[in-house]
Length: 165
Image (tube, rainbow, N blue to C red):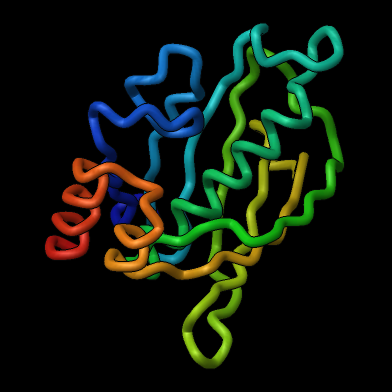
C-alpha cells in the first residue's frame, strides 16, 4: 500500500473548519489516498476536549463527516453534500495522541445521485474508536453554482481538480 499512497490537493485559502488551512480555529485536515480509501492523520489539542482528556464527540463527528465528504470528492470525482450520517462511538480518542480517520465508498445506488460512504477513526494501535455511515447527495458543479453554496474560487478549484483527476 505504501507506494500507492499519494497526498491529495486542497485549497490553500479555504476556510472550512475541517480542512481549511486558512481557518485559524479549525482542524486543518490533510488527505491522502491509496485509490481505495481516503485518510487523514490527526492529533487533537486540548481545545477540542469533551471530558478532561478525551476528544469531544462533536469534533469526532466533524472529522468523520469531513473524511467521508472528501472520500466522495476524491474517489468519485464529484462534490457531495451530507444528507445523513450515523455514528457509533466505541472507544475514547485521547487528546494529544495520534489517530487516523478513513473513508471508503460503500455504494452508489442506481441513478448515481447519491453515495453511501463509511468512515472510521482508528487509534495508534489500530483499534476502532468510532465508526460512521453517511449518505451523500452527489452534486454537479452546475448544481453547486445554482444553489449558491460556494464562491467562485471554490468552484474554479473543483473544475481544475476534476480536469486534472
